[in-house]
Amino acid sequence: MTGFAWLFGAVAAGAAAAGFVQGLSGFAFSLVAMSIWAWVLPPQVAAPLAVFGALLGQLSTVRSIGRGFDIKRIAPMVLGGALGVPFGVFLLHNVQPTWFKLTVGALLTIYCPIVLLVGEPPKVTAGGRGADAAVGLVGGVLGGLGGMAGLAPALWTSLRGWKRDVRRSVMQAFNIAMHILTLAAYAGTGALNANTFRLFAVVAPAMLIPSILGGRLYRRFSEAAFTRLVLLLLLASGLALLVGAGRTLLVRTAG
Image 1 (tube, rainbow, N blue to C red):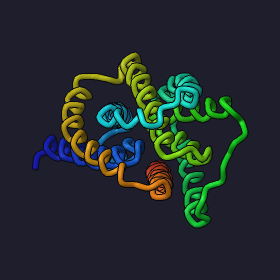
Image 2: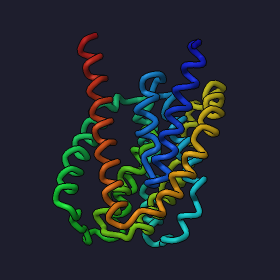
Image 3: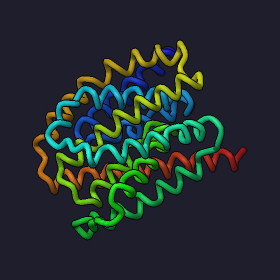
């Protein structure tokens, strides 16, 4: 197998796996895809692919937004996220994000097993729309950094105790807005080029059908099962961030 064939195969495999998981859960495309793409692509190439694939996946299952759509819950997060995206793009291109990833990964890896063992996550009712906007700001930063916008709202909507359809609706609407803003920011900084668009053409067909299949399977999940799924994916995301950041530190130390 030639180098190009191997690269395209790895990109397609990552897109297909990530598309299915995102269709099922409403988020996590970037982290699933990055767990494969990190071995074959530099972050500055993988990040636009992750954002593009995540946006396509969200749009392919956009009909599920209607069942729980609540503009009063979505708007503060989107406004906060819009402020965070430019900072995340700045981090991607100008700052070493390893310690940032280690911190986020450690928090998720500690929190999620505790909640899974206890059973029911604690409910947070304080903070109002301001707290929702602050969470959106964090999601926007993570989105600009590498398409990981869904992590913060996935965790926050669980803590808020919102119903399954409301949580998925908020996550999808937020993610769509963040991915569009992030792609626009990438275009403005020159991160999108001919090679990126060629890889976009690999990602799109590879992830669309798995994403639709995942979206159909979501309808079979109960409230409790969906909560467990989200927590398990957040835990896996945290571990992936820790492993990726740890590997970067080891390479840097060895060098």
